[in-house]
Length: 497
Image (spheres, rainbow, N blue to C red):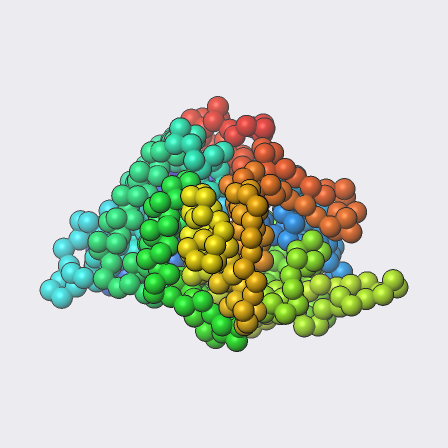
């Protein structure tokens, strides 16, 4: 990673900064002196809140929806997803999505490292010791999360410790550093170490808007599942399944109105007047701002100028008796149409809470832990049976979403079981930023790929993309390649510099 002068720093109210170009410059003019910004526990906590403010899954929600088979070109589309080629599977080193994800999480890494360095050198006042430990623990958790987010998009193979990931950044770099990419194994080792430190330092278990011990356990489960370490994944997921309930039908609706936290392990809160209270770039992998603005200009109704609608191949998989149908599809949608009426499938998952299109971003829900355990059981060959099986866990999720007893599935093979997991995850986590990564890691095993409805791909012919395609790994962005000679020979396969 190149830490040079060609950047733009946004000074947050909490004195942290976020880069919009290739790197974080730790010696920018006007930057607060670390001696004053980090010299007390309250100041350090203010910087931690600023670090939380950097985190934003809205850009990946946008990319995971538009690049895959979750959306279709909407009634009020003005070229969004078409002009930049994202809806046509165009992905290169200059694309918005890889640029945004790379910069965002390396900005978070830099800020987390500043807090960790300062906190480890700070002598707290009497009675502040646990406050300092909580701050440090959360900074370690965010550092682990940020390293993992980079691997999730930029590593070719999560299960290969020798594959290249991102940068291993466990220090505050200087402006002259040119870092090469590290291997997955090196980065996963640091992630594991950071999560152990976080769990030992943090005093609280559950908090839906702060990274407590339960967040750490959830991240450990996700990391292990991505790596194919299913014994570990099962253990971590099971620990949380004993503590959280699945939302009922009624609660599930409220969860996505932000009026209930049932089943939520961690979310990024969005509120009026914060730095994300804006429309930002629409139809682009830069995302940001109101999450619902990734799909509509005004609001989440048929009159709210939807420029992306629900993909018809997704729509066709959802039973109308399933509460997820009501959450994913706005009630003003038109779908019982005749030959002369155009259907309009308005995405309803982000209806707005404090204002139209603004909603909290759900990062970890207990339903994910259930599906991770289902993966682990399928990997063990335990995919059928009324208890302790993939089928039983998928039935458990469906029972909650339908509000009634559902049939127990039966799978003829491991491939069918993994395919069913992907199908269930597609519905449960639609528009939450999972589809691209789910297909990347499980598509071959479950015989699934990006597959759009013919009506949805008639606009450009981009109907299907196999999960073996190189575009299931993002390219290192040009902003990094141009600034950092150490990575110029480390571009991902299939891409040019």
